[in-house]
Image (cartoon, rainbow, N blue to C red; front, side):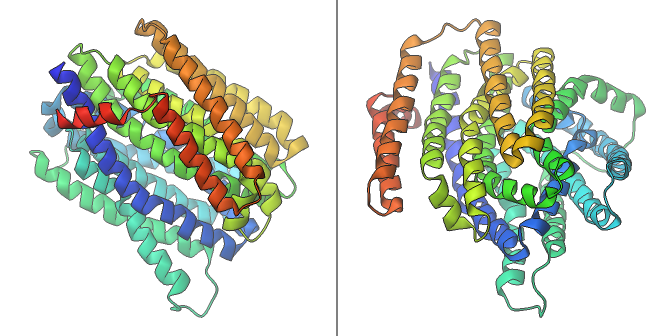
Length: 484
């Protein structure tokens, strides 16, 4: 029981710190800087950037081959391996970065990108290399359970970008309008500084003198990490290929991709918050499973903490879609509002994946996850080919919605079967009742003739109250955990 309280307290306290930092920085980045850049540069220019940005993700797995997830899990269970693995893995990642750049560059020509698009893409590819290094270095911090340090690093790049972009957007330092290229280079500079900062911290935690290349060690790491690589590759495709296919399949592809980006932006922000749960839970689940500790309580606690807000956010996004889009953007508000309502409905499914998928990853159930992700990718791509030419960006949103819910449901079933969990029907009924009540309340409040910001706030407050009444979230239990 003491260990249970200890694990729950560690999760809640570190999650609170992580959420505080990310809520302080990342929403302003997305809704203040990123949104302003799109409004200033226009839907077409930003849409082209957005499609290229997502293309740079498609072969992103070649930078990592599952090493980051494997390393997070491995260092959590075997912390003494940090000294041995750090230098060898860094050199291996340099080698993988070269392969990634070559393959992505060739693929861009096969898809018919123009010289101007390829020039932008090359910088975005460099950014992906830097991001992958940051994530690997962070996986060591998380594996060592240095969660607060990892939390600071998780927002450092965005904080630097905010300073640079704010200076360029509002500092009156240039005589020409803001260009999308400046936005991309600002990201590059921020990533470089973050890599240097993180590596400096990590080097102090490890006995690290120089980089050493050992071919047999590299092969051993790749052999152990390739199942993670396949999983990430498949999930990246069905999460990132939408905008690429929109831009390539439609005559006005850049415009449609820009409209899709407008609707996707808040989902992207919400996903960042959900991802924080996974970044904390993976090393914790891995450590608990190795010690054969009961994960049921932590699973239920973490899922309740993410599912309740996800339902509220999705409900508000459906019924206040036009008001939110009109608040954020100056162009294509009607089109993006329709997409926004569909895409934000994905958030509950994505949140479910971040909890149950993380548990399966920590347990090493990569074969099952890869089969699920492979089926999800095929389903998503086929649907996109069918729906995008007929429904444009709306088709991609519908494809995403169906794919996310189906894959999330499969992961929940896998967890219950593999861990022999007994369904808590009382809890399930509570969630169904909460979802129905939240949808009804939000719909009713959206029809009331008062300022929409007030009715939205009342909806959120009422939904939160219902969650507390149903004890989906228990303030008393959380307080007890923290106290003990």
